[in-house]
Length: 125
Length: 465
Image 1 (cartoon, chains in turn blue, cyan):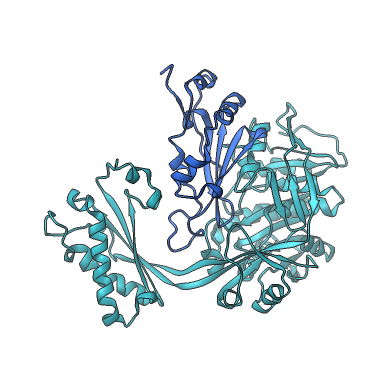
Image 2 (cartoon, rainbow over the protein chains, first blue to last red; image 1 turned 30 degrees about the horizontal axis):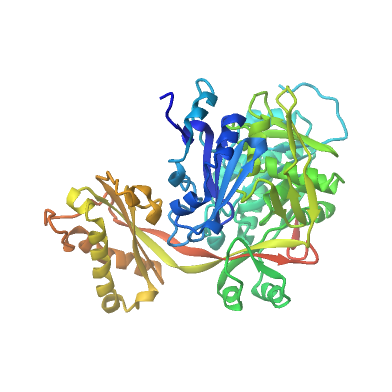
């Protein structure tokens, strides 16, 4: 356990995917603290090519945007079809973070986890 | 209880809830009223739950849900003599949804013996007006939507434009004390009154974005949000004392339903928050400052839908492991039989209807990017199969699906299966009608010269004998 990588769920207090308008998906990873956020940024955990592969997109379709005030990393990608299209599977994009749940922070991040943290909270309405 | 605070030049507001009809504690709103607010604003809709609500002009929150929240807000606003601003009425802001919401206002006023001037602000746009904007080169596609064509405009079932704060200003200047607006920028509903009172746009717009979803900035509290707008910053807090609002929870809201947390495009310009500061006051308040606002050519988003037939669905459970493991063979087999039968039975060509499957438990949510399928790690033992058909009429959609039930049940033979029946039906009637199908076809920005021109205002003397 001591030397195992830190899963993205462990490292964050919220993971949320939603529509950003009807043609884009926005996925937010809000870290427990600045130390974990900075490790994620420095180690380039959110590798654009890896994300493009997970969603079957081109590299240029993937935006990874850090937000210092909230210690969050946002991933914005195009929807495969507009929200509510007959082929759409997830009208508000609310489960579209799932392909990124295998992301990990390196083991040294484990010492930065808050004591007794409760893990990821549910997203706001 | 709120501490008595010295009145200042700041403008005070209540953001009761993220969406009208979702509910909020009445006690929290009472506490918010003791904050001596200057206005109450609330958003009543969103495009995020898909194109249906605009197409059908039907609200998401029904009469009782909406009336419960609206009654508390209206009675509170009238008791203080302060404006009540409602944006994106009835989920979509379609004209019938604005009328529907005003009818609830009138019902409440009659039952509570209230008299006041209200305004309806409409936001639907006619094809000729949209075409004239297109002809003058004033329309651009947003977020990867297709370029707008005259055919798309003509085929649209309903189109709204998203208003900024100016139509709210106009309605207030016309004497409105209660405003029921069509499609509105979420932030504009909150920014309108502070901008009208001369507060700087960067503060007003940043406040509008932060509070547009009510207690989302105080996760888990469900509290109404109150705040105060000053010339250099604004504050927010929960109406009753809590530790709900922190610098982090407030800042996190800039991420919400936004392609980037740093920029927010609004009708009159762009809010930039890269250098914003979020500071806790130690008393449950968070002070926010440091955004900038850069004016741009005035531009409203057009949201429009096309009507694409009617849908019926059937829920089917698949549990036989042999069928579960050959689900493609099974669903492909059903589709082939439907495709073979429909031209002769219903006289429809292949492009006039659709038959498709959502395979819950297998790949229904993530489709072709489902990691368990790409890694060949499926441990699926049961599939919830939603079979759906869209056709030119509701009746045909239902009949096509009804005629597919025998194929689903036993006509498709999956190698190695029991040869008896393939699936379990949880409901009778098995085929359920889900109504008309709409899709987004307009998602474009239209430059306009007069921010009020596309948004006609109608005053209503509510409660006048």
